[in-house]
Image (cartoon, rainbow, N blue to C red; front, side):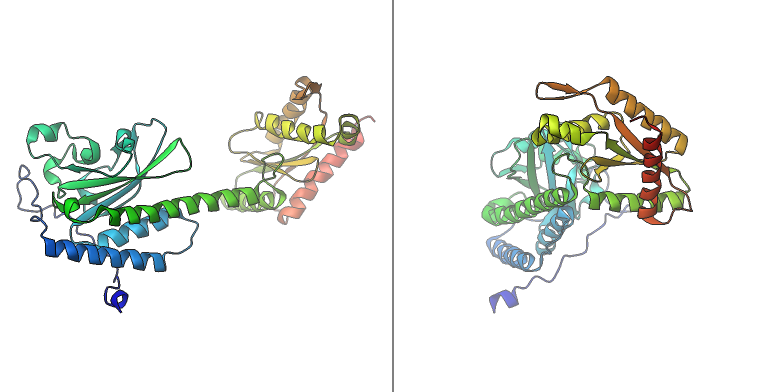
Length: 373
């Protein structure tokens, strides 16, 4: 019954600052009065209800960013004093950190919402009050850095930052709550905000896990290239793009010649290492926009956007010459690889992925027939 009474009814619409406000630029934006005990109890009740509702309705989606925004919406929508919620992640010793999500009524008060990376150094909850005097405002930093160039536009008076725990040592996260009263965070139990942070951590970790699982499902485990299924999906998208944009598209199918002999001489463990070394070295010969996948056991398919037949022929010749001059290194062996490369360039006469692959295989077979045994 209590949960039904306190059911969260949704986020409030955001106020937008009126550019024609009569308030003079030099005047500090008005803030809410000091929060009394009765209002503090009300805040605690509505925020708790919002947390319960969020846990019941939060979708199990792949998009961590979208779910983080839903979390921020729930927090801001449940409080009459919280004006802004900021969530960000800091990699290494980067400078300013852009928000991963930022929601609230203050969005138009600043031109950007970057925070300095040293804000992420706190090991636990940390609060700051907005400085009162102009001299301090001119040196404004920390959690109020976005208001550095417009301190009088600020409608917030205090901020509470809580770190988000990450399994990666090089990645730090933080969520910041901004309130319109200086004593707000002294009155409301900090553990409630920590509970929201735990939800953010779960969303973050779940999103990373989903990303890793998706990546694993799309990768060939030996070479790290796209697996056959993902290669087909990528090629279909590139063919559709080439058709729409009227841009050239070519593919290469590379086959390592006499690979069975290598397997007989060096053994299957070394043969796997040869395939892995080959896939790594060939990437050095390709452009950043090119994509490669393991097509069969010893065949690799490379998708070359915005590449015509002549350019594909040049690239194929360069790859073959490279591996003849640069042997792959496996354990203590240096092994020269001879490649047969099939080439096909997309045209309107090609119908589907299978037909495109067939043209490349026919090109490869024709080249193989011309080579001496």
